[in-house]
Length: 115
Image 1 (cartoon, one colour):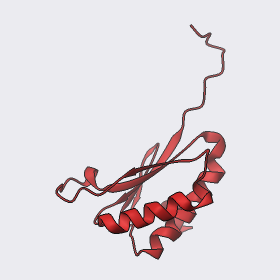
Image 2 (image 1 turned 45 degrees about the vertical axis):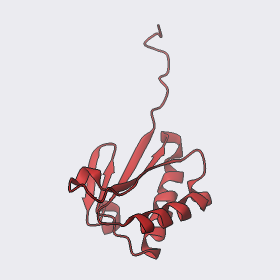
Image 3 (image 1 turned 135 degrees about the vertical axis):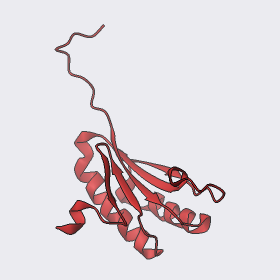
């Protein structure tokens, strides 16, 4: 049993990008480019959910989640900007962005984009 004064390990955070309407081929092109890009190297992690063409549920939309520890926040912000560039290359719109505190924005706009 750990004592209350013992430091707790930091929990990873994640930013999830919903990509409604993306087709499988484009999704895999984005994923391929993302996995080859050094901006997404460890300690960052990428979790991918491919599109499910037969589902109408928005929760089943294709998504990419960038997972990072609190100490890697700056790396995550740089990777997020790089992800936006890769998406633009293929004409992919980010429909919704979720952060650990909840939904941030829709239609590809986040509060950071308005500054």
